[in-house]
Structure formats: C-alpha cells, structure tokens
Length: 312
Image 1 (cartoon, helix red, strand yellow):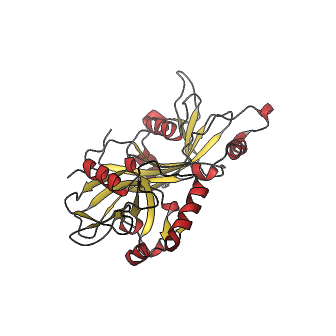
Image 2 (cartoon, helix red, strand yellow):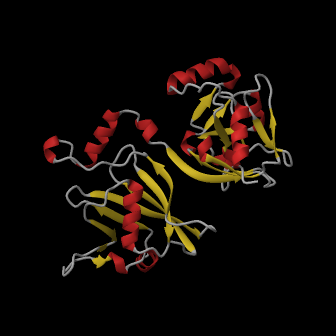
Image 3 (tube, helix red, strand yellow):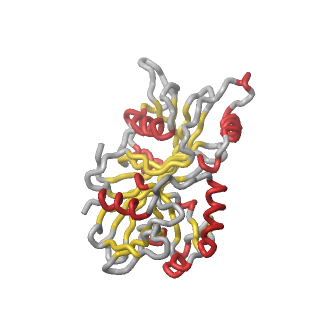
C-alpha cells in the first residue's frame, strides 16, 4: 500500500511497566479495519478477539452480519477523516473485551512518503517480546498487572525495554551517508582521548542493522595502538559519523551527533565507558553485560563487511 502522506503513530499498551510500545508508519488515509490489523501485527497479537477503536465518544469496529451495533463500521472510516473530523491526535484501541487490553495511539507527525517504500511499516519497538494473552482469574494474575509480574519473573526487563529506531545520518558534506537501527536511550560517553577530542557520543549497533548508503570511496580509516579499532571519517569534510570500537570490534558505533534531525545540546548520555583506563573498563563491561568478544573479532573485518555491502 502506498500513499502520498504517511502518519507516524506511537502505540502504547496502557498500564504496563516497563512500557510496551511500537512506532509505525501508515498511509494517512488507511481504513480503520486495516489499522486494526497493523496494530495486531506490530504488537504481536493473534487477531483472535473482538476490538474497538475509539476517539472521544465515537467507536469503530467490524459488525457481525445483521447486527445492530452501537459503533461505526471500521471498514467505512479512514484515519485522516477521523482525526480531522473529531479534531484529535489520539485514539484508543481496545482488544479482547474479556481482558480489555487498552492501547493509546498518538499521531506524532505527518510526512511525505519515501520513494520506493511500502507502507505500513514498523520503525521502532520497545519491549520486543509480544504481550501474551491474559490468564484466567483463577491464576490470580488478571490484567496488565499479571503481565508485569510475569515479565518481572522472566528476567532481563532492561533488555526487553530497549528501544530500536531506524535513523539515517552522515557527515557534514553529505558524501558519507548511513542508515542504522539505534537505541537513543542507550547513548554512552567515552573518556578516551580520541573520543574526547572528536566529541563522540556512542550508539552501538550490530553490523546487520547498519547500512552504508553512500561514501564507500570517500570513507577513510585512522588506526593507532593495537590497530583493532577503525576510526572512520569522511576524507572530504573530516567528520566521523561512525566507527568500529576496540571494545566491540564486531559491532559499529554511530555518532549520535551525526544523526539527521538531532538537537545536539539536548543529547544526554546514560552510560559511561572509562576509555582512559581501557582494560579495567572493558573487564567491567563484559562482567555487567556478559558480552564476550567472538573469536577473531577485529575492526578491520567489520569495516570490510560494511564496505562490501555499501551502495556505492
């Protein structure tokens, strides 16, 4: 499905801690019955219960044949008309009337559709596990509180709550461009001399989630010391939009300052790597995360993999 105008929606499952949310982009004129299916797919539901979309005191769903319903047929309503007619940017989505999973849907922005892009599409998620069906009352875990309890017992709530966003960025002159999935809430600062001098703010991502869109011939690399880290930069303007770190040479660090649309002064790192005492910091990082380097990991290999997949 394609359209000229795309709506970015934030979908939050209410009353759940840590939060479960998704960001999706859909055609602004999407029918509400199709929006229902988008929400089902994005949240990981199974489309096996009734639903209703509400705005103010109006509701939409799909009636049974011959049914006299107190809601409007969702197949005859479109998102843009609903939001514009009611003068709102927020919808409610209720799924499974026995358990009443309630979601808040907020319109975050409207934008022109990107060329050669198919919509709807999921662009970010928090808590990648799909919410499970609520248990029966005899299990004494009813409603959202039950899901919160089960998630707490399952462990790794912090890992489940990571937010991945697909963002683009690049150097100053535009000859180096990339697209990557990053966790803005996991931004870190490093005290080593080169990161300090460059003003690097770290967003770590996997090779599979990073794509060099432009600049294979323009990109250069600076190495020193062990030579494991690959400090890449644009040979034209000198800006370093990403690099491969010594601490995780099988991954890529995106410079948060080089993401498109970023307000630099508002960036607040939530983590710290004491690069001036690298060995101790690396030992602490591995102890805290359990992330041991794979055998043979080297920044030069990672950089080569990036360049081989580059568009130009």
